[in-house]
Length: 342
Image (cartoon, rainbow, N blue to C red; front, side, top):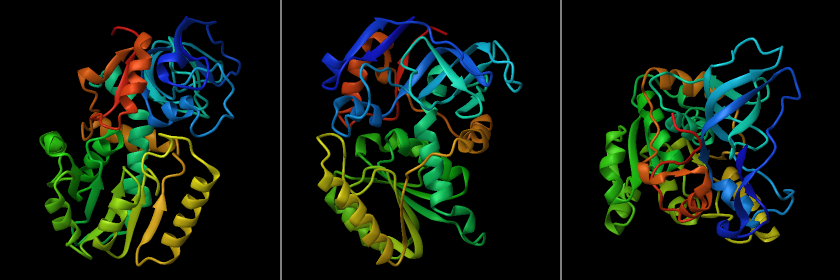
């Protein structure tokens, strides 16, 4: 089969190769073999490939966690899926930058794809949608808020991969959404349900939002760093929640991450957790149950959809270009590799 393989650490143009490799085989009776139709690209994959985060990954390797496709073979202990089922999900470990991948139905997140959802859109869901659900519903403790008032949220980075899902999930749960994004993306974000948009390029608009102190129940920050935190944290009500999907270092992994960077993250997390009038949390895990128990029902009701613009869909052989695009930190929605024509 063909796969996009990282041969070594370094730039996408020299690291990623479109090659022929051996077809993977089922090694457990709880596994299925999926013919991959599309696979989503996530920032962590580009950061790991670059070598900026860690050199513990053995090269060469095939990255890829998100997927959509069709089951072509299954183990004897798989009863919830059949050969021919159209599925999507996220795997662990990696390996979906390829024409086929093995998925364990008990250890990994996998679900049947709704017929109204394309393979491209389904492949985009994976990590980004589960991250958004974890941030908006679980970490923000949305279900603990009073039913007598409308909860309010600020979503920073609302036009990105996680942000576009976060806006839709928040609206599906009846939350008043203030979305921070660029002015040129405001119409898109409003079409996803945002009640207000704030142009992050306008200092006046940002300062006006920051002035609304003790107003919001929670903030979901998909950008990270100190700038937004320092400006927006005072807008949270007492007992509210600041959820960071990116951490206290903006674009961490875009350059080499040192031991001091890790120590800064730990120190910052402890300080903000202990000395704030609100709860400060970071996304550190993505429970696989959220894909089936959280995202799938919303998808089936058409309460959420993926934003995978045509210019952000690349062929598997053009994976290096896809990685370069995600490293720009300026893409709208999700970047997807199209592996097979539907």
